[in-house]
Length: 175
Image (tube, rainbow, N blue to C red; front, side, top):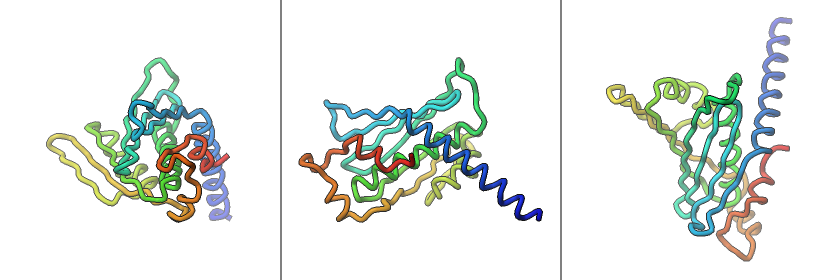
């Protein structure tokens, strides 16, 4: 009975996480700079943290920066939940492009280095990890592969062949 109860507890926790990630994604702010069409941005927020992400469309490279907002109430697991939401965004962009994205997480914060080695690895499955303990600089890299074929992605493109349309990226998010 103990194993079944543990499984149910894990399943319930994952369900709550999925709902929270969906809520984060529903409030995401997507941005496309008309002056620099090769850059796509998304802004995510939850609890006391804000996560700003960019994707360079021509090189398929993504990065992000997380910040704490001292005036907002801290919520349990906010870092992991924001990065789970980011993973969904990046997977949606990879699906739209029909190609993998390279994502690198870089930090000098020791707590975030520890997070990247544990919870971050659960989300992103890092392919390359470099931690310089002398300078406290950690770099974690992965590739995020599309779940649709390149042919299907090509079929979804509009008359603006390489344009990532924000509503199309949103269609990949869980509802």
